[in-house]
Amino acid sequence: MSDRELRDIVLRSLRRVAPEVDPGEIDPDVPFQEQLDIDSMDFLNFIIGIAEATGVEIPERDYPKVTSLNACVAYLAERAVAPKA
Image (cartoon, rainbow, N blue to C red; front, side, top):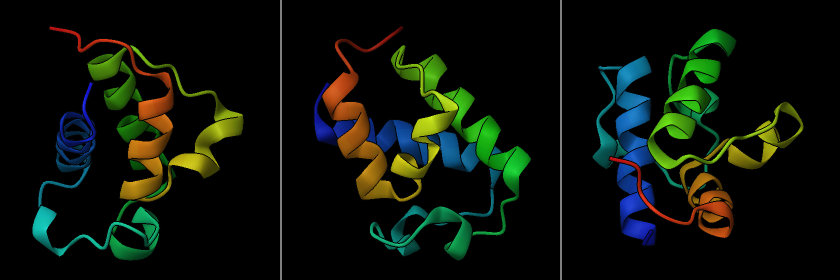
């Protein structure tokens, strides 16, 4: 998967837990929880959405590695092999 595809997946997953999010206003280097009004349950649902869309399971110990848009895309790029339908 390309970085662009992964970025789109991450943004779609964010929109599912925070529908008011404007993707154009997200600073890609600032943690999501600092920018958006999401709690730990929203973050967990975000992680689940990414896993369902990419097939990449993110263990809890790696949650700190996926807290911003750029960090999340980089993490997934290392682990993703093919998009799921």
